[in-house]
Amino acid sequence: MPIRMLPDDVASQIAAGEVIERPASVVKELLENAIDAQASYIYIKVDEAGKRLVEVVDDGSGIPTGELALAVARHATSKLGGVDDLFHIQTLGFRGEALASIASVSRLTITSHPATEPIGARIRIDGGLIGNVEIVGSPTGTTVRVEDLFFNVPARLKFLKNDQTEMRHIESLVARYALAYAGIRFQLLQSGRESLQTTGNGDRREVLAALYGVDIGKQMVEVLAVDNDIKITGYISPISLTRSNRREIIFFINNRPVQDLSLATAVIQAYHTMLMVGRYPMAVIMVDLPPETVDVNVHPTKAEVRFREPGLIFSSVQRAVRRALLAHSPVPNLTTSSYWRTPEESTRNDISGPRWDLTVDNQVEPRVDQPGIEPFEMARQPGFDRSFSRTPILRLIGQVAMTYVVAEGPDGLYLIDQHAAHERVLFEKMMGQAENMGGVSIPAQSLLNPLPVELSMNHARIIEQQLAVLNRLGFQIEEFGGNTFLIRSLPALLAGMDPAAALRVLVEDFEEDESPLQSELEARIIARVCKRAAVKAGQLLSHEEQRSLLADLEACQSPRTCPHGRPTMIHLSVDLLERQFGRRGAR
Image 1 (cartoon, rainbow, N blue to C red):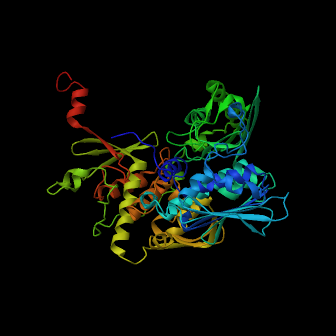
Image 2: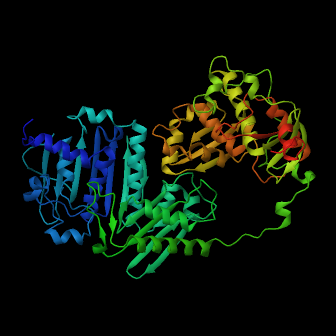
Image 3: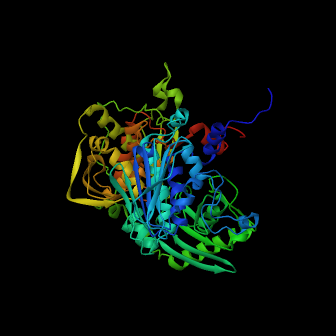
């Protein structure tokens, strides 16, 4: 095949594919232009998750009428003058590709009125075809409307996720810029509903409260450190506030949001020995350093950077976070009374304790073969003998390390993980109720006083999309304005659980999913809540509680594992014990 030049429209769409991946990419580029224009107020309007409309309005410096047509040309920018400027970049944009890329895959309209001119101007671009500049009246600043995104690239539309996922990407992106530029007032409307609004008063903690809720905003620990030419500021979570993934570890390099695995590792290492395995902190870290020591011209989306001295940046971030953490995290006092309890004390009526009066009804056939829940795939194959997965009648011996229940069976000893076992019991009970109630809500326990719970912006969107399903599972939850929800009842099975914790645990880990709470919906919700509601390791159980747990576990259909696949028990056979004690010869 001979070598030939690509047509302009093909080259434009290839270049656009590097910069404009989804609607959130459009929002990002337009936000950066508004910030670079020294805007004090930025309004973002999105319809149909950005596929139908993205509109960004700012009160910045505007584009002169004579330069409006040039602004949408490829590689046209006001932010670079020569090669040397690439190593001293102090603006968010500099490549001169954003508007041209957006214009090639949408219907773009730009209306701008610089403060230095008496009137504004407008230009329209339809799929890369540039129209004439019109003189119009408009307020000072710039308005950019992006309509029918990817209308001329239908294949790209098919790769977009569902509207809820795309909306969360946009919300998360705007939230990050609102944190970096707390002195700018941001307002985000999605499908006519206000998702985010900040005051622009420069207080980052106030922005944190708007994004994550007042509770979390108050708990965040401030970081402030200066190391030579490196200034590190921001907020980190105390050791009592964690997440199940590192998604909420956010970095800004010279006020530019970036993704950097090395810096995230530095934050995590600062928490070394302080967090449980599989738990991660929240962090919003701003690193300010001389522009010539960082290369931002690494990727078309400008989301990655390279440092001249990466090791120095890593150690500076780690030290700054560790100092702030130690300064605001005093060592708790441990008394013997908080560790050791008598069996009588452990049976007190504690509202946060486990429910031991929930014997599994053997007449109910729980649904335990949900995809993604049953860990042993062979258990679902035809002809599989389920009697292998059942436990024999067990005789209680006692508890070890306040974590494992020891029991004797006809064929040896069983060590039972009390947390995993209780998870399985609660899961099968609740799944059985959901199956047998059909389309009717499962039994619920009303709260004496409805409890308002404020969630982060992303978590609120997840909950509100699934209110009908949650209500059927016994969670009577209502929208209460903004990102706050009112809890009126919990499933009767979880009546002893903290309602706020029950609501938050429903969504904590679902950010990793592109369709949260959609696939294997009920089983995943139930498994997650049961994990939080189950008795914890390190909790002393009375003999009655231990016996009740064994009886409930024996009645389960799949007692060998918890709903997440961890084993509930380990079997030490009589033969193994005899070999260990030398009763049957050498091992």
